[in-house]
Image (cartoon, rainbow, N blue to C red; front, side, top):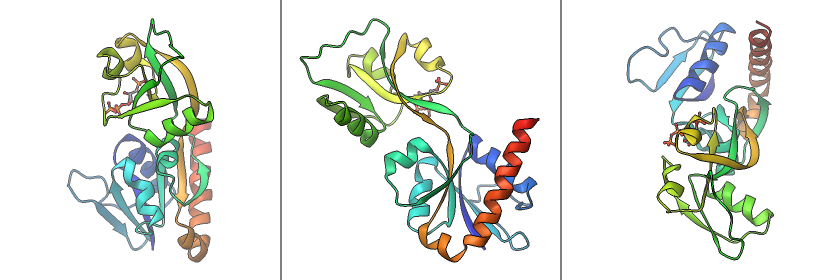
Length: 211
Ligand code: PRP
């Protein structure tokens, strides 16, 4: 049995649809119930629906053998797992953003609001800029508008949230997409089953890209 942590939401739905099409379906999955575990003995899979930001934790601790997680969450968590495939889904960018008329004062400590504390700290330490982190949990774009921070480090997908709040991208830090990850011990003991799932998943993704 392969234990799979799927992120709740659109990305998880997309990945589940691909896996179900490749023979890993659970007939009862994704109905309107509040159940969080779905399994199919016949297909040899058990799905857990987890909060996207928790996927890497389940996999690192072996509660799930594999998982699907955004590169942003993977880097932020620093989880010790195998990253086996870039699914090319859920594409977006990690960016520094600020007000449209923002001008940096390099003599002052930069105030950075973000959910991604580790990513922000690493980025600014690499470029040698002194910062103060303001950790928020959502609606990050409000911080520069209200003067709580100078800039934000956040995900930009369509760019709509920034535009509608008169903010803009100042620097792109790295591109993001969904990754297939595996627990290190699981990959040792269930490597055959995981590799088979990986190849079926990549085949389903390339087929979808061709359509
Ligand atoms: C994310 C991110 C941005 C927005 C970017 O927020 O933090 O706010 O999406 O998307 P866009 O470029 O397509 O506008 P999310 O919806 O996860 O909500 P949050 O404010 O709770 O972080």
